[in-house]
Length: 289
Image (cartoon, rainbow, N blue to C red; front, side, top):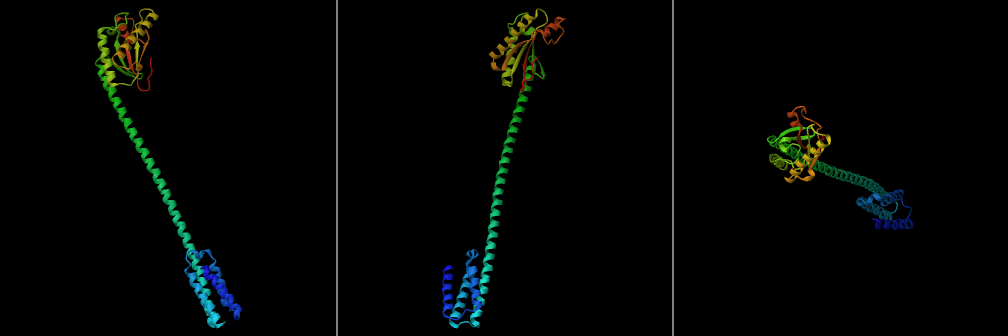
């Protein structure tokens, strides 16, 4: 397009030098063509500009051959109109291209945003699914633990007195069954019962902490009873550990005549108070006496 534009100008000025003054219509046609030819808009579609260029060249030839006459003016007028139409078409085409580009960019942004939101949604759904699975597993584990605890309580109830308290499951064994009077060596029948207790705890509950608490009646001195209850608690702990319960799970503590469960005024009451309690603590640790 620029090469044709360069060719037209010398021809036109040569006509001016060699002939009479060009008609105003031809001057106007050249002015309009120059405007559209130098516009950035025509780069999108230069077809109409080429048409205007050819029409202007025809008007220049007519002026060269016939001078300023009606035919030359008509051709010049037509060239000017075609240049104007080329300008309008170029502007319209550019505007349409800019609109299409903007729409395409908007659609691309929407698509990118949609993909991002879709990825975020998928990530959220995956996280919710993982959380749901974890909760389901946790619930299954809790239910299994409760089932094992109930089974353990049922099994232990056939061996000793079992109660559920805030501090945990309390297994109570009479001191008369475990020890001779004022002694802390386990009797044979005590070993049989403790073997059964250890067997249940190792099979049904492998994690809970266990507190062995020794008690005496009120007969005798405070210091003697405290020492006796501690020795008896340690004897039971040692036996449980030797029969499969992890040593770091079991603690022994003597309480002497504290926390009586019966009246020490009667032989029967004192017998009840001479006891060992095996406390299987709940997961939160429970509370000791």
